[in-house]
Image (tube, rainbow, N blue to C red; front, side):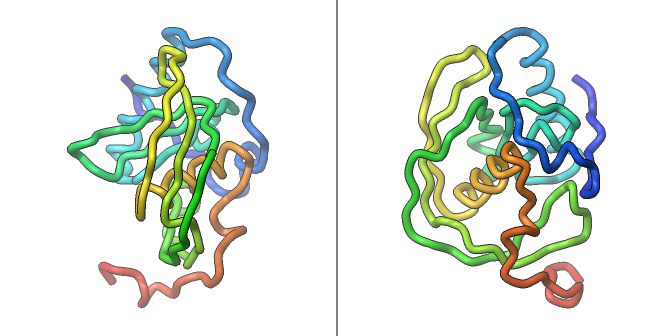
Length: 158
């Protein structure tokens, strides 16, 4: 495994729509493993392939250490319900946080690293993370959905 460099806001790759994954091979497995290691080191909740410079429909989410990393290849949100409003940040927009409205519950259809189709449900933070990472695959940064950016004194830990 290897750490990947995080692409930051301003890089055009973050505004492009990603292409579907068609080959489920060792190269894809390496990307997923590298993304998981990068996410752990960066202490994030999710990471999408364009954030490491790859224009493919691949993202990972990890909101619960027990559940571990959820790998989503060619993900599609197929159902949403409810709403939640909360703070979000992004590894591609360091030290910037804002209030975003997202669904409370999300069902995602995706493929695993072997090409097998599955569905996964997320509630609360997991639903928010699924939406945030899938947005990246469509070239959308969370800041375009922000209701209000947070001031430094509003962020936990300050």
